[in-house]
Length: 313
Image (tube, rainbow, N blue to C red; front, side, top):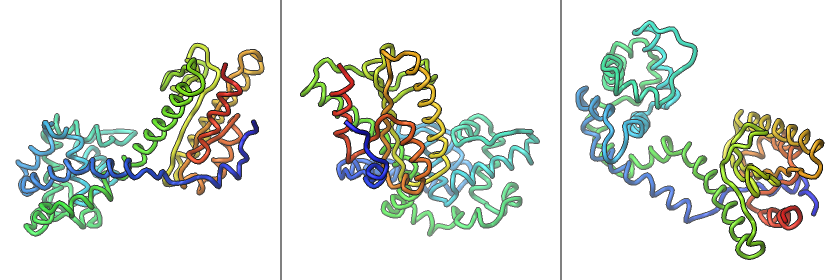
């Protein structure tokens, strides 16, 4: 079989349409929404807010609570990182080269009472806090924890659900779709094994020493690799797609060198790319196309079967 043309591949990029998946995903925010509804009155005083942020509970760990909290008060994770950098620099006199991620910030809230006090004071009192005096008003335009009407809003399920869906959950949706794509490929492989070749074997997410990287799918296994499959799904565009293309080009170059020296044990590289985010990065997509023996996506899943028929014994 011939490799799908670039235009055919590009023009078949699509959203993942799976209503059951989307419904389950949207429903996953329900417990967290109800938890914020029930907990929001704790946000009005320093002691109760500190207790909310610095404890893991049966329902949610401290990291999840922090992410949800900054969403409902209108502070993005990126802006929180800037605020924390200022605290580290101005109040703790740290010298540092990199910012903390949200997980590190949450751990520090738990373990450092002075840091926690400064941050909680900022959340509640905004410009009237020690930290707030050094922060632009724009960052704090939605800080209204001392306003009873705002707390009342946070008691409303639909209000909080909309905020969490628009903010905290957005990044997770793309990740979950990516995981769902891997499940789809696995189902396709299992169907092939059941209906066509019961001897099919494959490994999932194993490190392949030649490439020094975990591979999404290795057929038949990491020790006798014949076919490898990498997958990616992008709803939006970003620099991460260029990095992904760089990585795949480097992998393919290494494989070509290997294949030139091991003609009887060649390794094929299949790339699954989908999502309209790739249409905005066609140069990167073309680089991935050139660094692939075969390409496929949701609309061309049958290509995987054709490749297995021809190259897997």
